[in-house]
Length: 368
Image 1 (cartoon, one colour):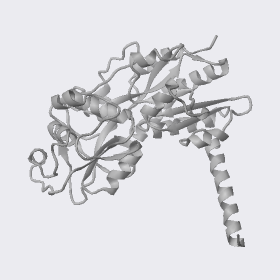
Image 2 (cartoon, rainbow, N blue to C red):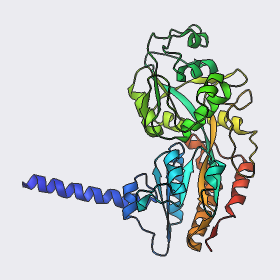
Image 3 (tube, rainbow, N blue to C red):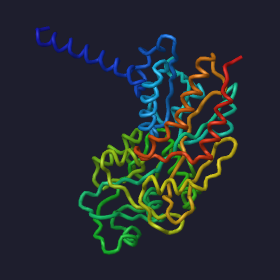
Image 4 (cartoon, one colour):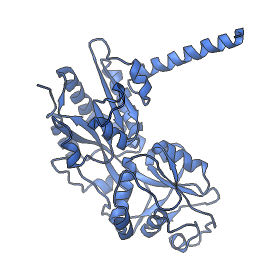
């Protein structure tokens, strides 16, 4: 090895070490490999989580801010998708020790049969809510693209294949649409974002209901491009002319994707926004198990595709320090943490929902 190669090797080693140290200092991580070098601060607690990509920008903000004010609590969060987050939370076929988590995260609340798999009980806490948008790439298209319920259901059923289809043109009078093949971009892995979107399609379209229903993983009809995570879908849309896909509002906004204005239950066309999403959730009645979906919200100004997203917690933790750290972290997320939501495109929880989630936190105890 010559001198330059040796120097380069030293620089790479130092850079890798710096990356690891930065991961520790910020109190959060999206890389599973970092967890192997992390440990609880002296006299403190390490909390490890994994799951949904949909709320991950907000979780990163939360966990970094919380660690800065509570340096004895270090939090890692692996952004692996809702399906994988649920698997790790339930402890199903764990491949290695670092897959174990103290909390999971999912945009699809656990079913009753999944809840009973947790020996000493589990809690689902709604902690924020967001909008699923239809982002698209039509570089020569100017103005606002409107999609009716029939049109976007038809696109994802694989029935509408070109951008100048009469059903799309009907909602966009006077606009020249290209004779361009529609390329759908969908999630590759089990995804809560997919669940929220397909639950909406299930509510508005009989054919979707009969063929697919709501699901975290879909065998999409026809040809569809698949990508991992909200970030992966957003990136694929940005690179692919003629594409359309479903992503979290913040991911689309962050990289400057165009998003469609969608027809809601009242027949009005609504652009995605925090206020339109908040309107959609205003009437949600949260049951005692904290599992509620709003697949087709009423209201003249309601954006049509919204979802709560949940943190999955155990009712019992191995020691009092971890139980206390979990309760304190998510108490902060449900109170002070809500002020971070709107700037990142999420909706702060309605007060009645936040209060029910806070009450549920009291059920967390150390194992006996």
